Length: 106
Image (cartoon, rainbow, N blue to C red; front, top):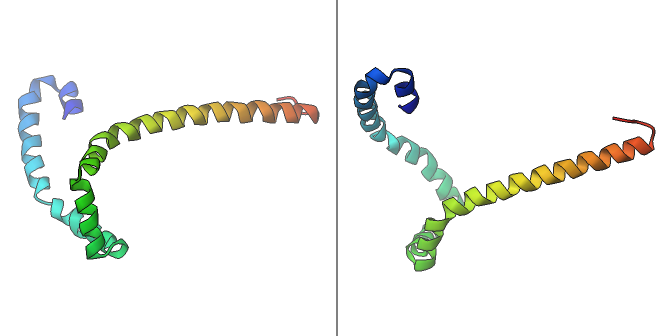
């Protein structure tokens, strides 16, 4: 919606109305996704295990995990990307050095 409004600022009201209508329409279809995902969980966990998972997430530490997990995932991705860039640069430097020893100057 934001991109549409940037392209057509004068149509912001109509865009909001259409998007609200579509949100309602497609939210009603969310059960389709659940119907496709539920068998995956049923293959991996018994009913008793699922009850244990629910109990965990209702516990104080489970609730805390739900609260902090999105931020932790984002920070972890940033750390991983920075690490990958450092390692990539080190691999590049070492490869060039080794190749130079063999008479290949990149």
